[in-house]
Amino acid sequence: MIKIKRIYDPIEKDDGLRILVDRLWPRGVKKDRIDLWLKEIAPSEELRKWFNHDPEKWEEFKKKYFEELNQNPKLSGLLKLVKDGNNVTLLYATTSPYNNAVALKEFLEKRLLNEEEKKNA
Image (cartoon, rainbow, N blue to C red; front, side, top):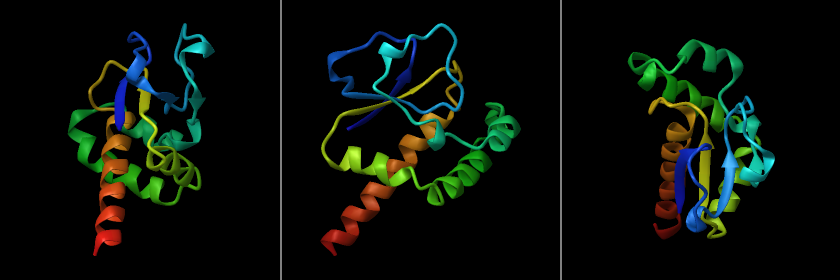
């Protein structure tokens, strides 16, 4: 199962593997609040700055971010963690509901669904 939550939210038992997916380390956060930091899975600096959590750019941001993810060698490791049955919580810092963790969760779920459909075809 893939969940998303703010890094500042309370840690829960069912969080499973807590993975920070922001490129920048969040202020005031101790390293013991995460299990893994995958900053390389975050949007490029250029894309992050262009988007700036603007709701009007959300769909275009996702399209560009998904293109980046499809070229990202770190993606296979993250997919493996999820496929292995681990509960995974993608952590982010922003207060905006328009953020890369939300987009990444959508991307991962679609990718896993497509793989499952191909396997069952």
